[in-house]
Image 1 (cartoon, helix red, strand yellow):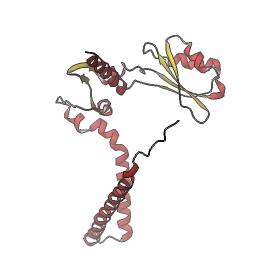
Image 2 (cartoon, rainbow, N blue to C red):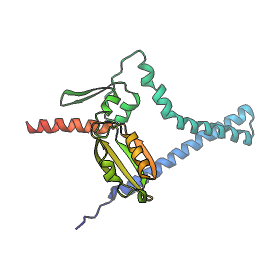
Image 3 (cartoon, rainbow, N blue to C red):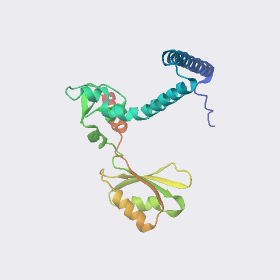
Length: 224
């Protein structure tokens, strides 16, 4: 018998929706008040017409949208931490590994009071089981034995079948020793006449490395 999944929010759904509506109304109301006062000030100070004021606000909105699109990229390059780190050492303690990849030049994983790993984010990524794994997307009808033929390549540890859609067969080729097998896979696909829709190399994931080393320590501590 398959158990029925209960809604994630259940009885609190209505409360969450009411709070979301109140916050939206408050945000919209605050925006209208500020905008109205600014329009009045522009009219009194510069004698701007409604059309000119609308053009000013349109340009400001366009610049705001562009800044939001560029903000993540600029933050990675010119963020506060990177700016301060030019002449200082900054220690950042976090469980959010995306921050490590974005701003850190050195990463240390500590668990049970011990330093487990110490290196650059790229060096830690190389310890991931999926380091240099190749994701392959094929037209399903063009490669009926793709998994078996990819697994037969030298240096391949295993081939995982990923969830496919739109008539595509998605496979992940995991190398045995972290070797980059992109060229070999491309040659095999070309020789077999497969219709390749995508080929992507994975660098590895810090989340997997963190989970792997900390789980090993936790198991070891529990066995004592």
